[in-house]
Structures are given as structure tokens and as C-alpha cells.
Length: 209
Ligand code: GRF
Image (cartoon, rainbow, N blue to C red; front, side, top):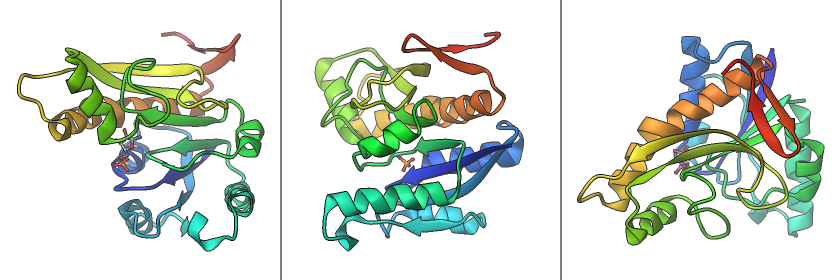
């Protein structure tokens, strides 16, 4: 049974997709053992509580320095003894110690087809604003392992989504969530939980694809 901790900052629709995936059998051999947010008002925490999943807030505002926050965040994660950490819209920089401790056991969902529209400053709606400004016809989402860079770790799954005439950033964000994020994040967790994902020479491979 893969024990998963999900880190969140906002509405938690990706967390909800994981919860529904476990409940509905799309994600097998998996248990969400905890949800942690840096934002006490994140609706994602409410979604966890509604589903009887331990939920807590670890906020940088509550600690005298970023170093102390980083320590407390890693402590809080380690308490659950997770096999996998999932960043589902988590907007805080992950401490290097945590990346090292969970190398190839921490994944992130990014709302673009990496390497497009990713890296520092590209998160949430900003990603879709940049895609529309560039005039691309295809966007999408990426699930990748987290390394020391920003959106630079080994790519596990990607899914493309069409841009439609007249799209606003909000319309495009919603379509990417519905058609891509909420599908490939649960799928990636299911594959990892069932031993189908391996990393070699910095690339992620999926068995029997
Ligand atoms: C989404 O835009 C996702 O692509 C990005 O952060 C946002 C999280 O949304 N990673 P939610 O909190 O899962 O609804």
C-alpha cells in the first residue's frame, strides 16, 4: 500500500481528483495518509477533513525564519512516513533537504507541457496568460518528479489540451484542469503505487506502456 502525503496551497481540485481516484478504484494500492497546506484558509484542507484525512497547516508566517519553517515542514511530512509526496498546487519552494530525502519519491503537477511555460514565475493563471499571449494552439499538463530545479525533474506523464478561439486564461485553466491535470495526476500515482515507474539517467520510464 503506497502511503501518500499531499501538499496543497489552494482550492484542492487536484487533491479532490486523487481522493476520488482512490475511492473509485482508478488509483489502487494507495492511501492518502495526510494533507499539509502552507495556507490555513486553503479549501483543500476542508476537502481533506470532509474525507476524514488528517490535515494540517504549516505556515511560514508562524515561524521566525524560513530555515525553521523548512525544518518544521519536513518534520510534519516525515511524521506520516510517506512513500510518496504529491505537490498539488503547492506554492512554497521545497527545501533542498526535503528534495534529497524524497528523491524520485516526490511528484508535482504543472499546468503546461514542460518545457513550455514553466520555471520561476510560471504558476496558476500566469501559465495560461503566457500561453495565450504567445498564441500557442496546444497546451496541457505535466506530472514530473521534483528535483532541485523549478519544474525540471524527470517527466512521468503529459497530456495535451486544445486552445479554443476566444479562450480567456480562466477558461483555458479550467479546461487544462478538467482534461489533463485531474486525469494524469491520479494516473501517475496509480502507476507509482503499482511499481510501473522507474527513473534511469534522469528520465522516467513507464513499464508496459
Ligand atoms: C492548478 O492550476 C495546478 O495546475 C497548479 O496549481 C493549481 C492547483 O489547483 N499546480 P488546485 O488547488 O489543485 O485546485
